[in-house]
Length: 420
Image (cartoon, rainbow, N blue to C red; front, side, top):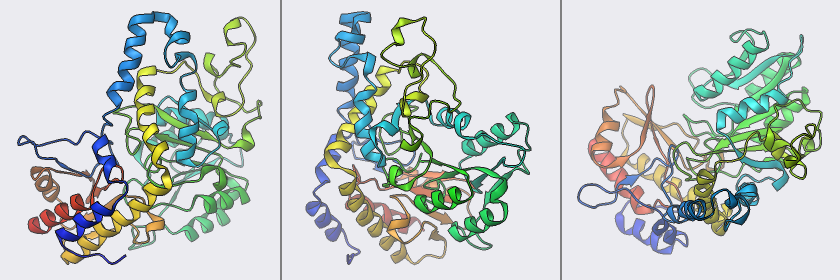
């Protein structure tokens, strides 16, 4: 696609965009004069769908009118409410419904999954993460290593970018596995790196890990609703993700969990147990011995918080109508235009560190700032451009295809150019 650096071109792209009407389904924050903010932080907190209030109010009304009977008599009975999300969430991450469940929060889910899939021995116990993994991932695997009696520094292997580079090279992971794979029990990799926005080849990572008899887990916090991870076809063993970023489910909302079908019927997998991963057919018999459910539902512990799930359902219904194929097509055009305009600035003070290949990134572009003192980010905020800052030197910007426009991108870069 040939881009042009002018407002008329941006407006024309919006006119021709079949997804443009979706913006009207979201609340866009406004300044004190009633003008829309330029919101580029869907990678941190997605905007609220206008339908969310209606979905939550439905459950509040049923709670008010039915009390406990809402578990069975509500418009959407609460007893099996999580099942309303399963098929839609499975489509978003490219999984089979049996492989997906919405529950808990991201790091909690990672710990529950590691209970089952990180089973170290005296000879095979190390964990591989990317060197710039999100801190909560690092803390989680370090605590798992210590819990099992291993050294959280020497037994944690970091997959690092090469000297002088920012992005990860998959051949380097292959080298690590070649030399240390016999001692590695688990790879826990961020599918889309939070800092650089790099989208990694999940299928190849799974193949390399499995060749050394390692379990492969993926953190999709910055991937779900952004890229198409095709989790089932990738062959990874497990994954987890949050829903408050690209999935627009509200601050601190519930998370998603994936367990590959090949593990679905293995009831011998060790796991923590609770009421809600007991066989739903006999769950209310109360005094029966534990009988774990098959599939991802077998990792649940407690009955779900309905109000949070209602917000997730409001967003997933939008995703289900639009489809990830259409969202990815727009995302690639939008970020391509964004990249083009930033490069047109021609400033030595900034550079994009996210991969230029659209297939190797989502909608986030990470702008590295020289002499980084956060002042440029502050100036953007003062101009009602909402991005986020990640230490030590990156402004993360995510033109999200559900509600961002080509005009948003053009206006943002015009202001950025002026500030530079």
